[in-house]
Structures are given as C-alpha cells and as structure tokens.
Length: 146
Image 1 (cartoon, rainbow, N blue to C red):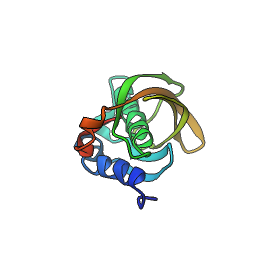
Image 2: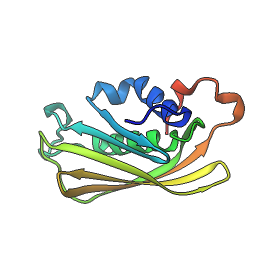
Image 3: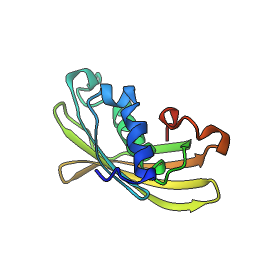
C-alpha cells in the first residue's frame, strides 16, 4: 500500500480508525491517487436466509473501498449517495475484492465506481458520489467516511 503522501496517508488513517470494516476482517490492499482496493472473506455470520452473502455486507465492502479512494487525495470526504447492482450470488468462504476508481471530480464533488469480484467473477457494481467536507472539518480525518 502506498501510504507515504498526505492523501494516501489520510485514507490509510481513516481505514485504520474504521472499526466496522476492520471488525469484519477487511484489509486495505492498496490506495493511490483516486483509487483503492479492499479485500474481505465472506464468513458464516454474513450469510442470509437464502444461503448466500447478505447484500449489505457486499455493499459495505464496496463502500469502504469508495471511502478510501475518495479520501486518497488528502481532503476529508464523505458519501453524498451510492447505489449498487448485485450481479451474482456470493457463497460463504468467497474472498471478495473491491476495486474503486475515481471517474469524475468537480468542485467539492466526485463520482467513483467500485467493482466487487470473487476471483475473476464480477459479483457487484457500485457507484458512489462524494462530497469534500468543509475546511473547518478537516482537523479530524479519522472520523471521515466516504
């Protein structure tokens, strides 16, 4: 993970303080300028009544990658909105990798796409809309969430 500059350092610091994501076993694999990759293994406690991963966990993984990507430029940024399309069911034990990339940045806003894969199979596509927080709120980057 490239965490040497202030942007990637902000994203890595935010992830380190993210008890929800880390409590689910997520790992920040990489963070770059407008990008991030996060991994999570689907555990038994994440399985829904249909015997597949609950979509909320897949969304949370994608949202975490989105958060890291949109905070990678050194400005505390939060989600303004997001949506997800579930493409394939995810079984227990699957290792999911969410890869986020900035698609557009304008003013204090941005658009990010996140692809969630299990091996070579796409299981979900996520689009997040970000908003940079005001300058006065940049003093506590650990509380920022994309």
